[in-house]
Image (cartoon, rainbow, N blue to C red; front, top):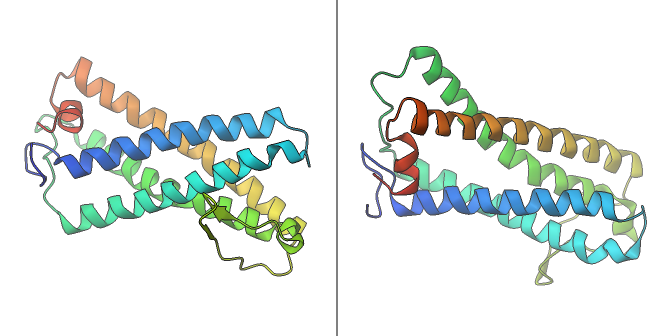
Length: 190
């Protein structure tokens, strides 16, 4: 399969962005769980992990933006199997809309959480891999607002995990139960 999507399969850029975003989200989920459970609140040893998490959160956001831009600029998409029931088509579309919404919301709520933190007022900058600083829309910071965004960030993560489970189960169902090419088109492009 080449560069472009066809009615029969996804092009390599669409597949690379799909699996790249998936890999970074799995990594970020593990790192997020580690960070929030391995360190006591205020532990300075957590700083490097949090900076890494923020940096990769930026990467997730950029990859999702690229994925949406690629999809909008390459409208051709593989057709769903003709035998797929209507309810399953609606569920599939809903899961995809939820995935994109949550993949945007997760890094945004994370950025808003750390931007609202009073730590920003003490010179703890949100840097992406130490290369550049993210904007800080909340000056001065607010612990209450940061806590609200933290709760929202956690809720969005749980929503994303649940939606990913549905997505993976759907892909496995197509591959092992209905034995169509839905999964192979995202793996091999055909």
